[in-house]
Image (cartoon, rainbow, N blue to C red; front, side, top):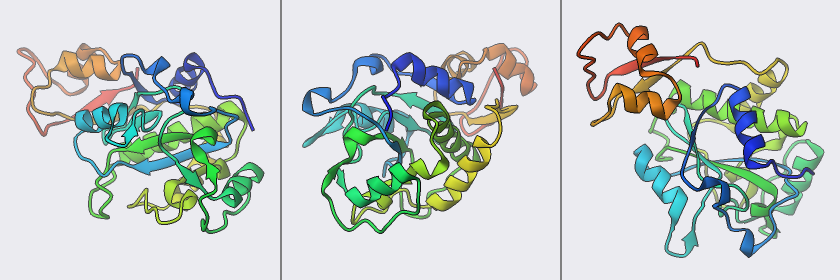
Length: 252
């Protein structure tokens, strides 16, 4: 068990692991702490959103919907690998799950099958929603899987946990299928390999231009100067970019 990270500690841990962090307005005090305890925490839970489009996904996870108020997670992991922080504290992401699974996470041993819903997971887990339709066909770009790995490793490293502390929603709550499209065993292997080394920054990543994007907006969103993005992609005056164009994003 561990005391949850403060907002500053969370941002520092993510950035040290090379995560491209986007801090949404008000995220540091956006939570459901008035509905129950937040912590002690035991692990990291990964979800998929059943949505498409980063802006709409972030909005839904921030605000929630009828019957389930936001925040619905602590952060949204977009397809381009950007991580949008939207909540700090208790979030409506895990619901009730299997207490036997929680005990296995605490002991960092193999997970039993989830067949009960008797334990509040919103108290015990950081929750990360990953932008994906969850239909088994919507792709998981390498940049997104890399971000999931880095986010998970950052929290494990900060708390002294092993990769066994990272689970999927489908491993926690009976009847859930998320995340669908990759296996949690494969992700835990990636996290374990990363934890064997020191935090590292990616040399480059990619971003797919959306309608209305400008280089300055992309740079501000990703925390990289637009001039560096232009140089990395050989873009000269008048610095025109097009929807669907894939840009190389240099490390900060």
